[in-house]
Length: 185
Image (tube, rainbow, N blue to C red):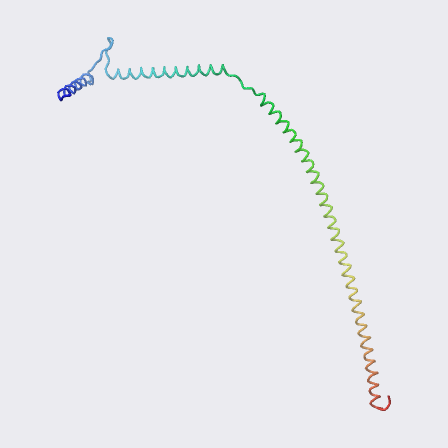
C-alpha cells in the first residue's frame, strides 16, 4: 500500500468516527431511529436474553437426560448382601453369647479368687497370731530357763567357792602340819 492509500483509509475512519461518535448521531434501522448508546443497551439486553434462553435450554436438556436415566434405573440385586448381613448377624449373636459366658466365668473366677484371698488372709492372720503367741511362750521359757540357769550357776559358783575354800583350808592345814613336823607324813 502506498502512503496515499493509508492516508485515504485514515481519513475515512476519522470521517466514520465523526459521523457515529458525535452526540447528534442517529442511526435509522427499519424506520426506527436509535442513538449509539441505545443500540449498545439494546445489544446488551438481546445478548442477555439469548444467554438466558441458552442456559434454560441446557438445564432442560440435563433434566430430560436425568429423567431418562431415572426411568431406566434398575435397582441392583442385594440378595447377596442380605445373606452376608444375616451371616454377620448370626456371628454377632454367637460372639455375644460367648462374651456373656466369658463374663459369667470371669465373675465366677473373680468371686473364687476373692474367697481364696480372704481365706489366705485369714490363714496368714492366724499364723501371725500363733507366731506371736509362740514367740511369747518361747521368750517366757527362755526367760525362765535363763533365770533358772543363772540361779544354778550362782549356786554352783557358791558351792565351788565353798569347796575351794574348804580345800584351801585343808591344803593350808596339811602344809602347816608339814611345816611343823617335816618328818611326819
